[in-house]
Length: 499
Image (cartoon, rainbow, N blue to C red):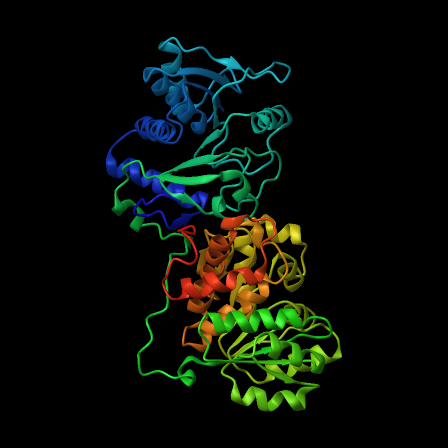
């Protein structure tokens, strides 16, 4: 998102409407003037990012989003561009009616959408069909138009949000525009940054339209985008004991890799010591592959106890399994009431056998694990990720990371941060194990659970972006280990990455 003063703040639809009303009152301008500012910002974005475009087609709905489109068409034609305008309805409403009248009085023609008609090629498609008020699937005739736009060879610019995307949740209940770029107005909409929406928004740009800072202060944001942060430099007089001891508990038969990835990530992010409690057959391979890991054979709770006494933070779950061995270690680890990161089968066991947490705890479920924890379907989780992550944090009195595109981090008080980094190449085995180790290492180095989760998610996603510069498909979890070390030290990684 662009560098507007409030570009990290994300709001609900209700909050955006409050800010807009406050802006009109404070700035003493009409809704029509604000609409004209939006159209001007859209034209400026269009000229910056597609400077060679000379022909565009604007699709306008009957509401204010369509009004933005009509005024963009007016300004674009005044700038010498060829503009074709396609409307969903023969009339418009409110300020949008004034915008339509301005287009028509200047000689602009309006073509009503006909699902049987052909659309000639154009250089740029502009989506101004539906705004933030839409919370249902587009009806059949409009859905067919959306599919036509998506199938076009031309790039798509969406005004305020891609039509069909729920601005509050990011859910797409039906057809939705897939934009190359979205310019959103006045304030960031939280739904555009997570879940299915990220496949529809493209590059997200915020245009504040000159709304003064005082208007925003009366409406605290619902969520915030993560910022780039790093740990402070270490004192020269430091030793390994100053940076914490992480104990990774996991690696049932055939799953040593999960425990190793978590342990190695903890080392790369700066834990002073990392032990791994695992099955006997995995110990030689772990020591040979990464001798800095202190791998220990643990055949049950009695063998785990001395390792718990020496550790500061537990990373519980990578490769743990749900059988008797994993369940016994899980119970013993939770009974220790130590700072904890719980993932993978540690979460699946929690869903079967709920437990409370006293020590600082971070849960890192993916949507399927979150669904099991809340006893709902994965589709219900994805329909409103914000509600899901808040409920999980409240129910378990823990910080929760709901993983996925636009990962969310919530605390029990309802605070939510959203991760703007990461890429589809990270959808592969082992990535969650890395995150577990990263967050555990940050807890061990003195971060609070909230700090460790936010910084850990950011480091993990940014390292993934650096590692994906050679291509997303085929990315391995272990490819992130080098960039993790660099980024954790405030260095740029092995390349420019995505800031």
